[in-house]
Amino acid sequence: MIKLLFFVLIGGIVYWRLRHPRPAAGAAAVARPVEDMVRCAHCGLHLPRGEALGSGAIWFCGEAHQRAHRY
Image (cartoon, rainbow, N blue to C red):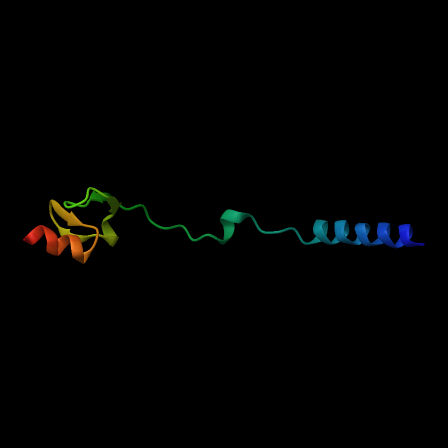
C-alpha cells in the first residue's frame, strides 16, 4: 500500500512538472542597455559610465576618490 501511494505521488509530481514547466532563467531578467566602461582616475577601477562620477576624460568610482583627487 505504501509503495502504491509513493508511485502515485511521484507520478503526480511528474505530471505536474510536465503541465507547468518553469520559465527560463533568462526570461525573468530584464535586459539592460550596454554602457561604456570608464576607469577611476584615483584607483583604476573600471565601472559603467552611468555609475561613475565626473565627465570628459576624468572619472571616479565614488565621491571619496573624487575628493581625494582634487587635493
